[in-house]
Structure formats: C-alpha cells, structure tokens
Image (cartoon, rainbow, N blue to C red; front, side, top):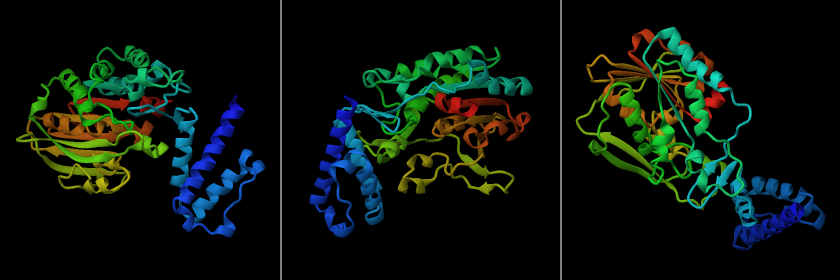
Length: 364
C-alpha cells in the first residue's frame, strides 16, 4: 500500500515537472545536461536527486521544486509538510510531546525568579494555534495536548505568582482572527484579548479596544509556517498596527546585545524595513536584541520587567500604556542567563510571557 502511494507520488512529480517544462521553463535548461529519467532511477530516488541538483544549478529553482513536491504530496493524500498540517483554512504546526521538561521543571524558572526577588510576578503561557483549532486537524493527526500541560505547570507555581489562563481566553475567541493562518504567532487582536486579562491581574484597567486605531500594514503577510511549506493554498495574512491617540508616548528605546554599547533607537519601536523583507513579523520591536529598554512619558513610577519570546512582541504596545519603563528580555536569545540581564530591584513588577512550545524548548 505504502509502495503504491510512493509510486503514484513519483508519477505525479514527473507529470508536474514536465508540465512546468512545457509551459516555458524548459527554455532555461541546457538539454545535454538535463538528467534523463529511467524506470530504475525514478523509483530508487536517484533521478529526483539529480533533478533537484540540476534545477538548483541552472535555475536556482529549489523553491519551485519544493512547491511542486508539496502539492504532489497533498494530491496523494498527505496532509503534513515538514511538520506542518495543512487544513482548508490555515497551516498548523505539529506539536511534539517528546523531551519536554516535567511540570515542576517547567515552573522552576519563574519560581526561582520570584523567590529570589520577591517582585510581584505574572505568568502567561500561550497555547499554539494547533491546540485552539485541534478539531480542524486531519483525521488521525498526532498532536501533543497543551491545555492540560499548561494547567499542570500552573499548579506547580508559587502561590504568590499570578497565572493567566490564556487558553480559555483564546478558545472562547477562536471564531475571530486571533492567530495568523500562515504563521505560528497570534495576531494583534489575539494579543489584545490576553492583555486584557493579564493587565487586570497586574492591577490596571485595560485600555478599551475602541480607543485603538487599526492600520493594515500588509494584506500579503506569509509567515514562518508558509516558509516551511511554501504552500500558498491558504489565504495570506493581514499584518496590523494598533495605535492610540492621546496615549502614552515613547521617549527612548535602547537595545543591548552582550556587553556592547547600547544601540540608541531613538523613539522607534517598530522596524518598517521588515515590511519589505521575507520576515514581516520582525516589524514588531525591530531587530532582535537580548534586552530592550523602552521609556515612555508616563510619570507613574511603574516599571515592568518582561521576559518573553516572539509572542510578546505585538503585546508590548498595549503594555506601554501602563508603565514609565519596560525592560524586555528575550529568553530565546539569553536562555538560562535570564536572571543576569536586569536588576529586578529597579522594577515594580515582572511578567513572563511565552508560547507553550517555546517555553518547553527553552527549559527542556
């Protein structure tokens, strides 16, 4: 059965590639060098490797070949490309359960921080879109379950740490545009929904949604899941910017990497050049930095120490409406050195915000 499927796949690959050639691509080929398929080389995989090498050398067309192979896999019944499930509405990352830390081990970094500093601390673990939209996964899909794991980790937290149930917030909003269709991250709206819950636990009143002005930066955003599959059968995403009139204004942004002199980013929180790149999501917070210091014109004495992964990037603008300063520490860059990146005594609160997948990868 499996062998028949592989044979059908190879036949379809051949047909698709020759259709491309007949459509005009052949003009770029050098006939004498083009690898000729035989029955033997087609079925033992040698011809496919020869063809891929030829395309890369003569056309730089690795992406074209990869797209053809991905679509062929879908035609013969495959529903996963490079660890990404393909559904009608979105691409969903396969969640793995191997080699994850125990709940107590996963809770330890925040517990250690809290017991050593005594700083009021809030903790948010964000489920993946694959967890929220699990009912749309292909039949018999293998996917690790996250909602129970999040609760298990929360149960190991020190009683003084406030945990935010992002899963229930997002699950209740899943009919809305809360996750990108082609990227692992949540949208600005998804971040806003969880911000409302988190900021209340941190003692503030959230800024009403109606006060924000929403600008569409791009309607052609294709994210990291698209980059892994090159599958364009799912609708492109919309990248938004939320701004607020008469809100807190940024007065200074400093970026630190290692022991280097800080890069003065003036008052620029965003990187507009990223909108012209293949990594549009880098628009939020700009180029990665181990530590960012963001100061505002609020004179309320409230300072936040934020430990985060990429999910927090588009939430920072919401948080800035409540603090005179936010120190952003990128856990994906500093890892276990997170405790040395800032002096907690200079801050009034701490927030740990990460996706569940990133958190397991960080401490596993």
